[in-house]
Image 1 (cartoon, helix red, strand yellow):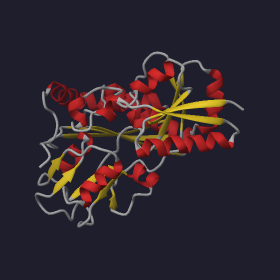
Image 2 (image 1 turned 90 degrees about the horizontal axis):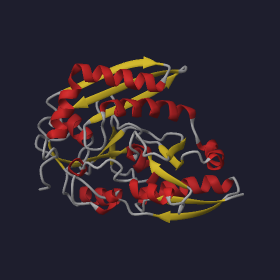
Image 3 (image 1 turned 180 degrees about the vertical axis):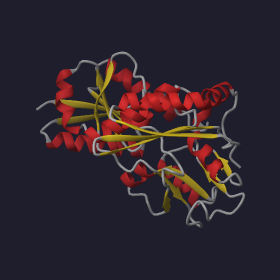
Image 4 (image 1 turned 90 degrees about the vertical axis):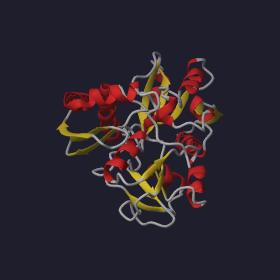
Length: 312
């Protein structure tokens, strides 16, 4: 078959994802070559994601390699891919989805409810921060950056009483020892595309699209397309507190969307159903905008320092 060159970030989780796709492609007879590419997001580790605010911060350099022909495909966590891809690229496959929920990790406490007042919780996601503060305004939420190992180590060393991470990444890496609770999406709506991988190629590369089509999962594509359509309608990225979670039953999609203030003082939630993923996502996004999401987002985008307090 063909030699396929894969571009990937160099984090432990990104490499797991790239090797996972590599193994599936090798089973089809392809020869695989992996190129590790450092992205802007990898270079900035001491600043909360909300303060960076650059769309494509985990993807741009990989897309540059794709455009220049140095790699043939790129493996991304779908939630890192901007909802509007730059010209010249397409998503050839969205893989079968891992658990999209967020996980609560702690050494001492068994659940969010068990945390004492004033407990220190680590996350650099404004989406998680906003929903945490809505649930438990008595908690202290602080930034948490770094790869999965780094974040878990900081928890084990006592810097935090608990941290919140995506369940999917922990499951993939087998690092579930400190997971005490997988949080119900009703309590914490996941990020759009969380748990799915997006395989990106050059636009119109029909040969590569054909090689990769077996990786495309129709349910994962439908649910994540709906979630990303909502996110796109609201104009969001990693720097704003927006959640989206779709499920499919009997060919019908149900989509939950949330938009919240980072301090949790206001949280809008909208739930609607439909058959067309894009139409549904845009409809839920419109409903949130009409209910005041535009004011929340304007305030968040306009804030000079949106993020959480400095790490203690």
